[in-house]
Image 1 (cartoon, rainbow, N blue to C red):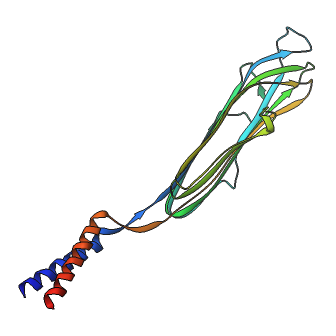
Image 2 (image 1 turned 135 degrees about the horizontal axis):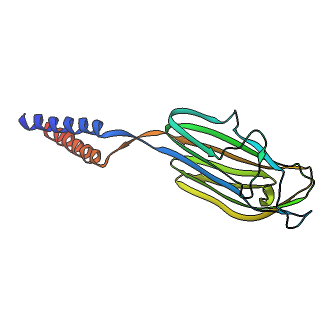
Image 3 (image 1 turned 60 degrees about the vertical axis):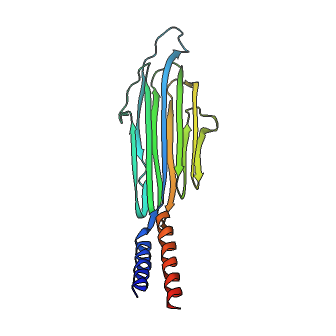
Length: 246
């Protein structure tokens, strides 16, 4: 009877620890989108009166995040959007020969046992107004870097840049990542460009940074290795009990 009792205790103890050792391991999915854009005027040349410095070129504009930008999160997750840009005067101001504008967007999202659907769009417009009677050639550079990183159970993300008069080939570039484990995509370029601003005309430098991303993750019960050994011990104890009772 003592042997039977000890065998029962061993078996029940093993099965109890098996239940304790089995737990839910929460997978997580993440996406990160990072965009940096800048354009800088390197020189302004007076075509009407060569050798004469420029004057009476004004600029104004705005940088606005779209009203529909945001994230829908179901379950356990969070999204951190960060956007920054140089200030743009809403009223006309004198343009300097070394004018530059930079903007950046960073979107970080992670989810466990749920899903995320994100969309962010920012538009920056800079209007150049030539109120003189001269024609100018404006030389400038455009530098941009778009990068996307995804990881986890399932995630995909797209980061794009479109423009008006920035001079990006095709007026559109995109970095896209889709993965069941991890993946990354990067698009970068540096361009030297020029534009003609006629007498009494206005031109626009307009850029749109857009990010869209989804991430899905779920929790599933996974036994740790130690539980396997306890389970085996329990089976052995029960087998011994059956043999003794026979």
